[in-house]
Length: 206
Image (cartoon, rainbow, N blue to C red; front, top):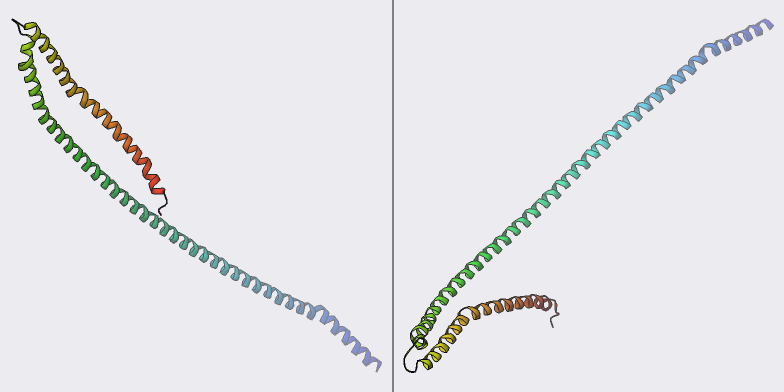
C-alpha cells in the first residue's frame, strides 16, 4: 500500500515536471504566437486604415484643388468678360466723342469759311466807297491850287485825314477789339455755366 502510494506520488511528480518543462512553455509559446498574430493583424488593419485615410485625404485634396481651380477659372473668365465689356463701351464712347469732335470741327470750319466769305463780300464795297470818297472826292481838294486853294486844302486835308483814320480804325482796331472781348466774354460765360451747372444739379428739387 505504501509502495503504491509512493508510485502514485512519483508519477504525479514526474507528470508535474513533464508539464512544467514541456506543456507549459508550449502553451505559453502558443499563447504568445496568438498574441503576436493578433498584434500583426491589428497592425495590418491599422496600416490599411492609414492607407485608406491617406488615399481619402489625397482624393479630398484633389477634389478641393479642382474645385478651387474651377472657381479661379470662372472668376478670371468673368473678369475678362467685364474687362472686354468695359473696353467695348470705352471704345464706343471714344468713337462717339471723336465723331462729335469731327462734326464740331467741320461745323466750325464751315462757319469760319462762311464768315470769311461774308466778311470779304461786305469789306469790298466798304473799301471801294472809302477809297472812292478819299481819292476822288476830297483828295483833289487837299491838293488843289488857284484862287481859294488854301480853304479847299484845309478842308480836303481834314476830311482825308479823318476818313483815312476812320477807315483804319473801322477795318483793323474795332474787329480785333471785338474778337478779344467776345472771346473773353465767351470764356467767362462758359466758366459761369460750368460753375452754376453742378450747383443746379445738386440743388434739391421741390
